[in-house]
Every structure is written in C-alpha cells, then in structure tokens.
Image (cartoon, rainbow, N blue to C red; front, side, top):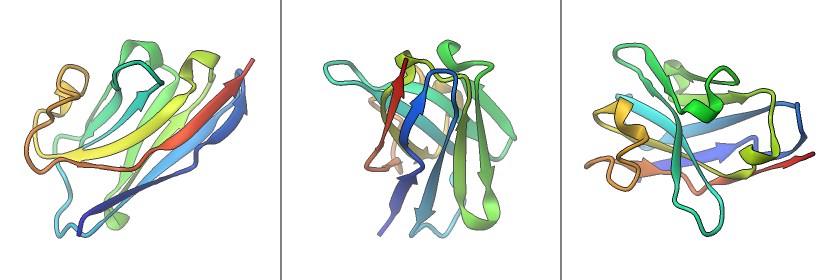
Length: 129
C-alpha cells in the first residue's frame, strides 16, 4: 500500500521558516514528479511547488517563488519544502503528492494529475502576524 506522510507543519511567526517533509512508502520506484499543494477552507487546492526527479527541475507558483525551495532525497524517497519569509497568506493545509508525468502541470492540473497519483493526508501550517 502506497503511503505519503507529511511532517513538519506547525506554527510560525510572519517572516519565519518551516520545513515540511513527505515520506513515501510502498513504492518500488522513485516517482517522476513530487509536489506540494495547499488549501484553505472554502478555496480550491492550489499547486505550490513541484520537482521533476528525472530532469532535476523544480517549479514554483508565483506567490512562493524566491521564498520556498523544494528538494528530494532519492535514497530515502523523501522530499521537502523549505519555506522561508512566511506570511499569513501562506497559512493553509499543505499536502504532498507524487505522480507520473507533466510535473510542470502542478498548477493547472491539481484536480487531475493523472493515473498513479498519490496524496498525503496533509499537515497544517499556521502563520501569525
């Protein structure tokens, strides 16, 4: 059974940092695409960042570009999101996901990343001003 488990969420002050991690288990391969998404109540889930593990390319949504960094550790099939300069607008439930293709489509294809897509349960991030 495939599982993605997020960790590292919590509270931070505005301007502070948090590091999210997502551990993947139950897969016998390294997913081509790994990414982070976030959602606040009443709004659609939005793509935050994605990484293409084959081409070693990372992608970011405009609101987080320059502040967030995505990385992955193939040896442990784990990936991370380093979040710096947090603002209250970054507060949300953060979800990690792994999928097979079109990594750069993490913004447009949130609701349909394709077959072999796996999601974590989410971790809450709170940012106080």
